Length: 88
Image (tube, rainbow, N blue to C red):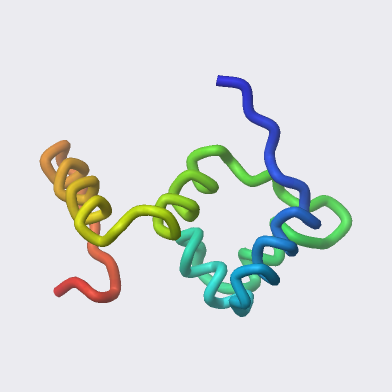
């Protein structure tokens, strides 16, 4: 797979199109907080967004809840321990 990460301006445009805050974008991408999100969208040396991280976030936008739950269950069957905020 060849992959070129989105530019910081591409990520800023995605944030604007979604109408989300930096904190919400951090949550979507599985980041600790909006400071981490800003590391991908600004500064002198912004981080490139990995394909895996982008796939994770876009999957959460595009897949229905049942599909996401199936993926999480498969991850758990593989030995992962994962919980989202809405799970107990």
